[in-house]
Structures are given as structure tokens and as C-alpha cells.
Length: 149
Image (cartoon, rainbow, N blue to C red):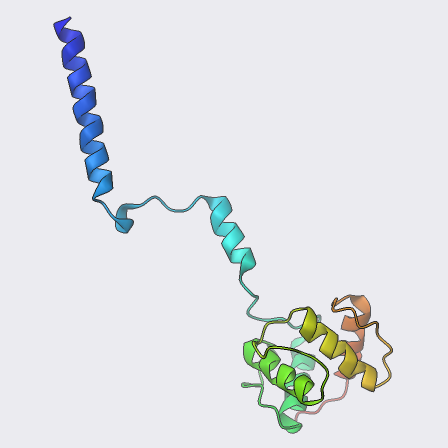
């Protein structure tokens, strides 16, 4: 009986110490988020670069086109990041093509505005907000001309 009591007291003390230690540990000692949670939060973040199938050279051409038509895309680096898409969204909105919020995120409104813009040049795209093969092909073809000087 004495051995059982000692064992229970020891276990109870250990649990109490552990609980007290964890309660005061703060966030520095907190366990990391499960892998599934970390992955989900990363997937929810907007992509830093969205070239919509353009090569670096063609993306540079798009950036030059934006710059040369009065919309600053930032660095002409062939990476269509937030600044490039903000410039495009400003251009699309100025042309009343409905890009919506100028946030640099390539969502359905930005894709619809791009489709409307490309349709000005007779690409005859469905304006559905989906960057499918036809939209990507038209965007590729539009950027065939080298606007960079």
C-alpha cells in the first residue's frame, strides 16, 4: 500500500510540475503547428510571382508595355509580382475593364480584366475570370512583340 501511495504521489507531483511548467512557458515553448496547418496557411497566401505561362523574356515585355503606357511595374525583371500586377490593375481600371481592387493579387477580376484587354486586340476570349489555356496562349501571343528598349 505504501508503495502504491508513493507511486501516486510521485506521478501526481510530476504531472503538476509539468502542467505548471507548461502553463508558464509562454509561446516560446509552445509546440509548433501541425504540418497540415502550416501547409494550409501557406497555400492560402497569394503567390509572389504569377507569370500566367509567360517566359521571363515575355514577362519583361509585358512589364515594358506597362511602363511605356504609363504604368510603373517596378523592376523590369521578368517576374510578374505584386508591383507588376498592381500596374496592370491600375491600367485595366483606367480603361474601365473592371480589375477591381488594386492589390497585386491575380484573382478572377484581374483575369477578367486581362481577358477584356486582350479582346481589344481581337483575341476573342471568353471573359470568365479563369486563366485557362486560351487566355494564357493569348497573353503569350500578345507579348510576342518586344517593347523593351
